[in-house]
Length: 403
Image 1 (cartoon, rainbow, N blue to C red):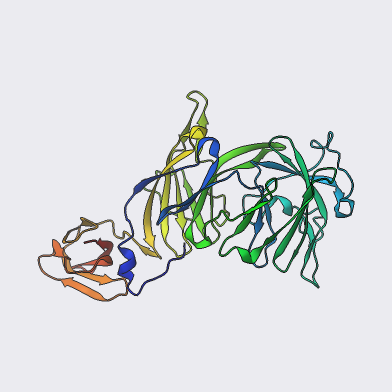
Image 2 (cartoon, one colour):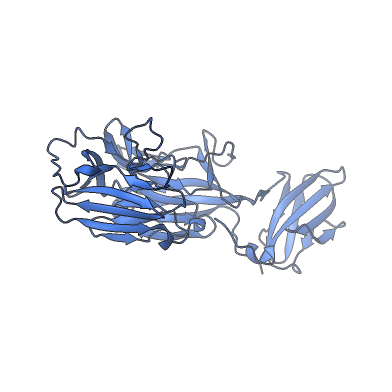
């Protein structure tokens, strides 16, 4: 999450929380909602996840169209755009037609983006790209099958000048609707959302830089032609995740960073058929690196299932913009945060203690009676306390001053 820096680093720091904290988000009964989450600020927005069918990419050069598979199924019909005036007969076709769902490695893998001709680089799935005009013109007619069994045929007619043109109708062509989605109408969002049956365009997503992960329920193809809803988390563009399994959560640390948005995913829990409840997978940790460079440790602690969609977890900030919160296992500083005295316990003979602000400026130094240091004169903020031993060793702790 991008952060606006104030004139003093300390002005921002007083709002931060260090140490492990517990939190919970709720997706509601039947996972009807989804939760966009910021590790610094908590839940950003909890929003209805049933009020859209298609999501349209708003990035300058993007053309992805994603599907809310919880609300509708998407199929190739046997018709192209030129066949729009022909009635589509779905009898027996849903077992024959190709069904499309979103990919969950990247946000750019939309259900409507699967190319009909994989050898044609200009085939973008729902339409063909023109290298001269830089327009995308619709080429395929899709069928949307809604949860109540009703169907609509739909074509994305074009993407020209940042405007998607959409046309849909009943299978016989009646009740035709034409709608547009204009990218510039939505500031700082990844997608604009469209409810086909209500013909409404929904601005339901928070700004791109306000969240790191979204907790939601989505559909995956878990086996050939076997589709199932799963509940988990996907991360924002610009965020990376390190998944660490087989290591006790108390001692785990990050290793390789992954950019695929489903690195957290859904398999941090397993269903126990004996108790008809979920168990959290042991020895599984996630480390989330924000776009600003902060690193948070995420550990799931409970999942209550579809009755309420409650997801419980702990979070702990372990680095702030690349600076470790804790360094040196032989150094203990407490209480932290504090507004008065910091007590120091170090495994070596102490020569000096220095405290610098986040700009590197020395604000306090002590060279005698170094079992504690009075910090009551310091302004609120984040500081680095460095202890140097008589033999030249040094260790650093980040300390927070709060008045």
